Length: 145
Image 1 (spheres, rainbow, N blue to C red):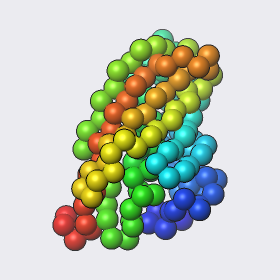
Image 2 (image 1 turned 45 degrees about the vertical axis):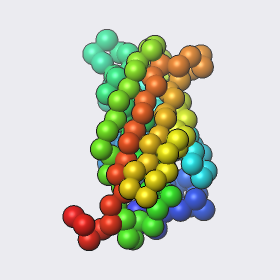
Image 3 (image 1 turned 90 degrees about the vertical axis):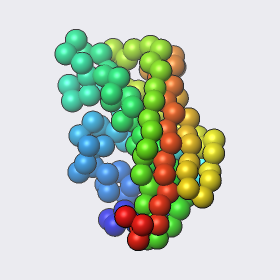
């Protein structure tokens, strides 16, 4: 599937197919729900996204956050005319995931013409916040690069 054709009407199964042959698929990230200004996803704990001691790697949390926020911004713009580029990701890790899956909810908090800012909360299986991630995406016209 051509990533520039994604929209809020695209079934999440097709979105996941479009993302599976990338870092996103390698980490096991799965989009579970999309809506205007919100994206939900999950990431099962595996050897590909954990530290050597089996705990979910903080960098994988940041990748999950940037993935959901990036997809959310892509769905809000015309991807044939604009590119979405992550320019800042920061996270506060407040807990751990030792088994199961991390679930995440991304919500846009600023939707400007040139930047989008997202909050992404990531939870362990008990519903405890394990990471609070903030993502800033830059929106550029395709001919600007």
